[in-house]
Image (tube, rainbow over all chains, first blue to last red; front, side, top):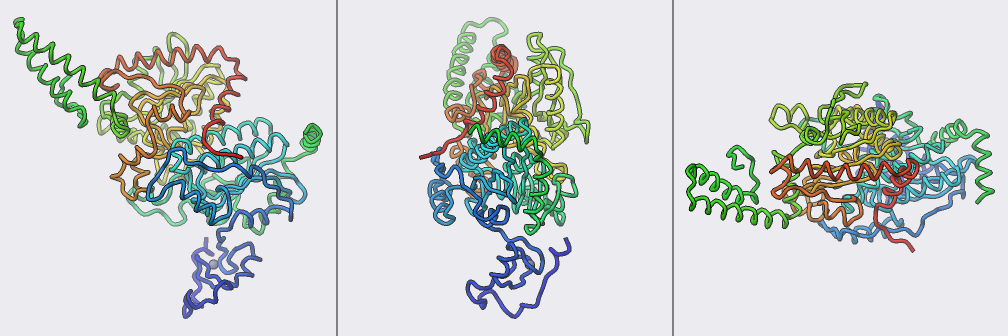
Length: 293
Length: 322
Ligand SMILES: [Zn+2]
């Protein structure tokens, strides 16, 4: 955790407004000013403090998958507003806005891809789409990804980034927790591996369902991971929360994740884990399944 | 009925007034006074009509209030009335016994079953001991332990849900609240014995669903079930916890709503005046509903039952697709 606390003050004379537009970016954690191109080449990880910048789904796919190997599935499924829900804004408008700002149809992308030549089914969540929240469509797409993994006999990898269940779909959202967990039970019964990757933040109904059900659970450094959000806990207990509470390192210490892996090491680690699970027997069934399809 | 210590909700007040009047007249009519007797009969009819009027037109928020009524029957009140030979089993064999969840073995119509349920406390001391019905991870793990026991000995499971939510605290995060709930969803979806779930009070989010996966999901009439409490929703989306009534309407949290949404299978009737007005009658109706379902589920071949259970949750949700 030492890297998280270190604060570099070299750029104090220069504020954000003076930074040339688009070329430089300030680290949210250590305030170091980073050259954007360099940051991108470094997996969007601050070279000074190790802070993992939040990244969109496609960048994650590029980090995990072999170039050009990702093939998207379930492209036409979209959210509706079943409850005609309105708070400060209509839910229907929120969806429209999220679609236009992210270019995504929902908060998760699913598909198949290769990791050093090994075929996998992938689901990657994106926090930009209504906080990565899980409504009917996110639940259904995760469930179908598990189903696809089962049918093709591929391992399943899910990258989570979510504030939890989507309140605007109320009880429908809640039931997605059961839906996704039930599909994963089928996957487990078929002895297919599921690797869960937790990124900042993974909380609420997503953590309390598929995200915590991996055969192996990996997390990015310093990601917020928990059931309840820190604000709710603070309100409930009426006291400040300890340093590092609900961060990846805290979960590792308490025994709820297998390892913390930086983005740079992620693909190689995934590959090694997969080769541990996929033996010739499964390769055989994979090819049988392919013949049958 | 008119006990001055009883907690009375605002919309129950007109009924309580009449009940008080009836009680007073009864004390006067020790020597069979025909006039007073007639007046009592008239008032009783009036009270009954009023109850019917009020209880058939409850708003969503009024049902939420009834689900939390301080005199509402809790899991152990139902256990006492529905089961025989009940033995409570304690502890998750790992960390501690969570009093917010009760589990045990009992008999329903002579048939051995496993019972799991949330448990709230009645007086302040017990409320605190049971953490107001907010379970910790060890509560979910205890429930799972007993469910696996039921599976091992081929006994059906009855789960009674009544929690405002899983507890949001430091200890519960340290001990993996999310993992405990996730594991239960995973295991309950393919446990090889019938599971009947009844929302008997509050169906608060993942804390409720954590013992809420099953073959038949029922809700008692005056209950709610949703992804977050109306207060929680109001404070996050409406930036004002006092707008809970609006949030309850927006989220559509009542049994009728969930039945229409295809998320529960049936509604269990309560006595007029709510379950808190007549525990025995409420328990008798609930017992009959569970027994009927159990007989039906036990006839379904196990593999088919599990397939149907997974499909049932698989079908939940609404979306569009080209
Ligand atoms: Zn930094």
